[in-house]
Length: 325
Image 1 (cartoon, rainbow, N blue to C red):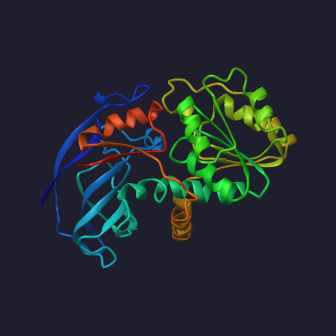
Image 2: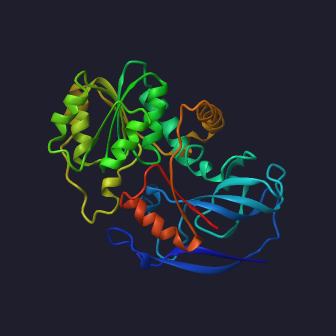
Image 3: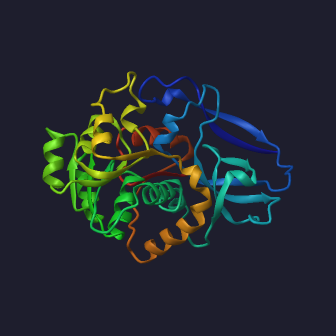
């Protein structure tokens, strides 16, 4: 048996999560392993918006991704001493089945990158954007939440594909960050007085692809500026995650009919068979300097909930990660 700690949901979230909504639980883990299982010590943990969206009941462990160092193994793919990226929740030590491990982390690679550009956000950006939006060189791509973990990568991939890229985010600092990545035009949605006017100024020829992380009225206005045959990948709706009442927005059905739009939601897990291909290409783009990585780090297992709340409040630029030591 080995001792471990994990975070549980102490009570139901009421709007924006609070520190008192989380509780640390001590547990003993049976390290007598079955074939395919490993035990690992967490090196870093990810905080992501999807964690807020999933209906985890009070008393249940918080879900999420971590990079772990394998300390005991009954899996030939993951020997003792190697690092793995897995869906383990927020834990200090955990036991993972083969299905819980996404992949083995390359030696010499910064573990936190496996939670960002080479983790769930990177796979979300690569697979969702390329499969659903099918960008073509010369087209105009719109990304909201463009300074976040997924959005900034979508914009960079769109530039690699030869597109004009427009983004929006929630602060002037984030606008500057997105432009440093190569976004052609970026605006601060919090200070923008009228979305349709700004969108038409920044995309006078219309928008062909829209990667939607946010939802709400801004997303409806973006659809109103799209060209016929436009494609929309719906990754999330962060504007509603902490709302006690669903936010109101203009209906989009008419726009979809007359503009012949294609709109599709997706979950990154559905693309798991494409992850090896995506990882190879993302690693190459990082090596070539075509994908730039930016993280908002914090440290200490006990500080994971604070980092999570800061991220939901817009306090991160790029990927928010927590290093255990």
